[in-house]
Image (cartoon, rainbow, N blue to C red; front, side, top):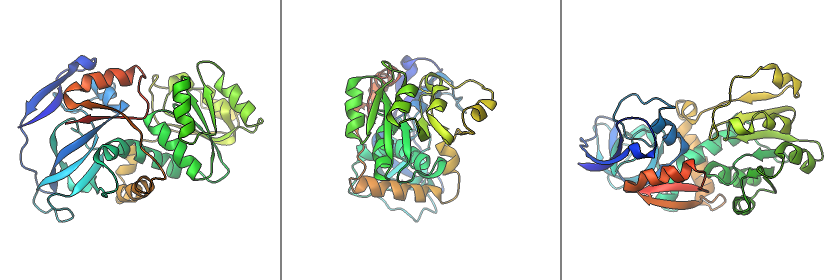
Length: 324
């Protein structure tokens, strides 16, 4: 028996219930992980509200965490009891412990703390595919990062700068602007106070950006397209302000033969061997200290509803974790 957050019906944060659940022994190919920290992400809100349908009800939300292996299922040879591990993309994270396929886990080096790992997996792997796969950033590129003080945004700012890009970030206020600058943004735009597309044009001397990374969605589209130079790439990876509605694809031609893509982490993780490749790159830059993971809020697991309220109110910066 372990404590977990359960959702019996979709709705507001109040539907997150802290309950006892039975946890069986791990099955073949699985391990049981006693969690030390659990990541909180906007995708958890989408499942809680029903925007993303869950396959079953009730269900335990959450998809990333870090802890130690306390039981091994039949056939597991790549891990041993006591190993430190982390994961992203596996359901049921909002719990004290869970059974998970061993192939979904990555070994966690001693140089990375559990709460850092829980905060970095989904966001950090997202940043990895954005920077290296959706649009491979090169030295000299000009990059626009929306919500630059958010969990993914702070990682993107640091990593893109490390790759040699000029980083422009948009944020909602001065406190967030400070965080974005500290993370490596060369220029920061207060999107509530100024036209971000006009400001990008001014900052770049009219040359505009090679790529826009947009996790905001409806509120920043189609303005983001006006920030791109001809043949630039618009990468939509989230919908914090609501989904981007259907648009005439001819708009991409009108604004400079642009590329637009809507990738997901889960599609990348479905490719054989890609998790190991992505995680190796992530753990290297985090473990070395070149990219720092900002954990700005920690809540007890029982207070998951409070964490969701803060996330939806955009009152958070960096990452939020739950502690079992």
